[in-house]
Amino acid sequence: MSDVTKAIEEIVRAAGTMMREAFNDPRKPAYSLKGRQDYLTVTDGAVERFVRGEVERRFPGDGVLGEEDGGAVDGARLWIVDPIDGTANFARQIPHFCISLGLMVNGRLEAGAIFEPMHNELFIAERGQGAWCNGARMRVSSQTELPAASVEIGWSTREPTATYLGLIQRSMEAGCSVRRAGSGALGLAYVAAGRSEAYAEAHINAWDVAAGLLLVEEAGGRVNDFWADGGLRRGNAVLATNAALAEQIGVLTGIALK
Ligand code: IPD
Ligand code: CA
Image 1 (cartoon, helix red, strand yellow):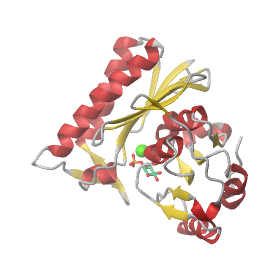
Image 2 (tube, protein in one colour):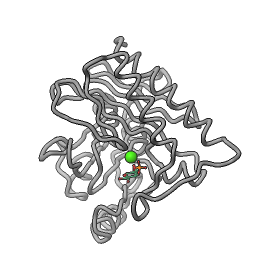
Image 3 (tube, helix red, strand yellow):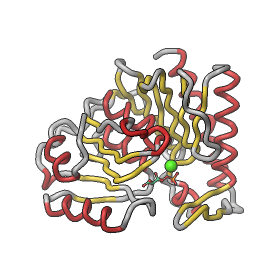
Image 4 (spheres, helix red, strand yellow):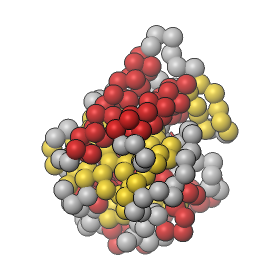
């Protein structure tokens, strides 16, 4: 593991401790809504400020793009952070949320990690070196049959209801089990870990997927070209699959794989 990847691990573990302590605080995290079904807690901002500070201290001059405070995306080295992915779960006391931190160099993801603090699970990858969950090498599932496949389909108010329902309907009619657990980043990590065959969402933001896309590729899976058409600034559709079902799931979701 490179020094950069070790730094990523240290940062996400420390951020995870902040999240776990806030989640377990008996006063319960207060939340507000940025918009319909778009949750915000004080911990989102606190964790993002912590990560920005760590990146600035360890890698002066690098850029940071974050869910809460934005950031310029034109430098050669860009850190992409979602301080809490699954904020609705965090706010409602459901222990399924994470921090996601990825490093992009000249437009290509080079390293990234997702840390899920309530089960102490670290998913981490480095370009060309592989992907690991708590030290064990990850491989995508070898499932070849859609009637045995689990697909997670993400949802937000950014897309029409009909688009989401269409994805669910086509997946179910093909025989898949469909879930939505409320964290796109963990959804991608679970594909890398072989716990789901695919994660799909009609629109998602760069901070949700920056680490997860690399995890899936390094675990032998397939992903779409999320970064095409301004995905870094505006977000894009996302699809990540195991290798064996990639063509079939690409057709049924209508999201083209690389
Ligand atoms: C959301 C979650 C959700 C996904 C949405 C994201 P947040 O992020 O990842 O699962 O479907 O597209 O916006 O609000 O929990 O940071
Ligand atoms: Ca998010």
